[in-house]
Length: 227
Ligand code: DX5
Ligand code: ZN
Image 1 (cartoon, helix red, strand yellow):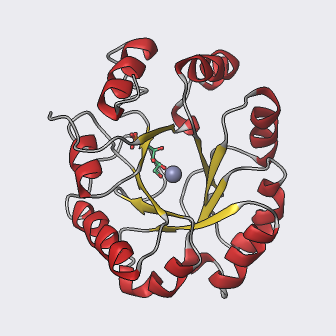
Image 2 (image 1 turned 180 degrees about the vertical axis):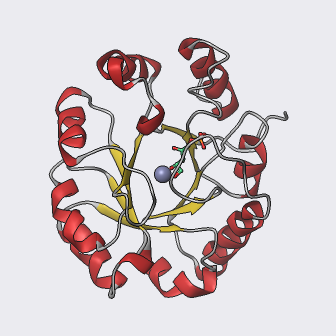
């Protein structure tokens, strides 16, 4: 495992947290200086799983000062935007194939004072979503297929991150690139070297069952150069 060339932001994936002790998890993240909470939302339709609800997001927002990054893995996403806007997240990303007019969805998110972004399924090409990059403040590159924690990295998704970073530079755009899925101790450096600015930290690192939360946080902060 090598040290990434650049600093990056760690975004704990709350679906992987100890939900029976979420309050203490959140205060641990606040004390550690975490800057973003990744909230994976699943409806059992776009992906065969269900996770956090709008109420959980609003209660977390009331209890924890760390800004949220809500990742909507739901069909008919336009129905869910107002529900999750109530948590006043900093970012809201969604999969463009879940609405007929993704640009309008992004504009609706922005109108609510939230920074919009798209999440790119491994099977979706950059060419397909390129027009939306002009409206995006954040782009979540799925480095596993959406739906479950504990999956293995799709190796060629690193090339997608690199291609997206190159596209961003060529177009003079400034959206943030987020890597989401199997951000393990070995995978984080190549994800960041490829261009990721934000790393979604799940069971592969922060919630690594083989180490304490504080040891994992220390190790992540060191990797992120945020120690
Ligand atoms: C996939 C999830 C993953 C997960 C990350 O749909 O969004 O991002 O939270 O956890 P691990 O590290 O287990 O992939
Ligand atoms: Zn996610």
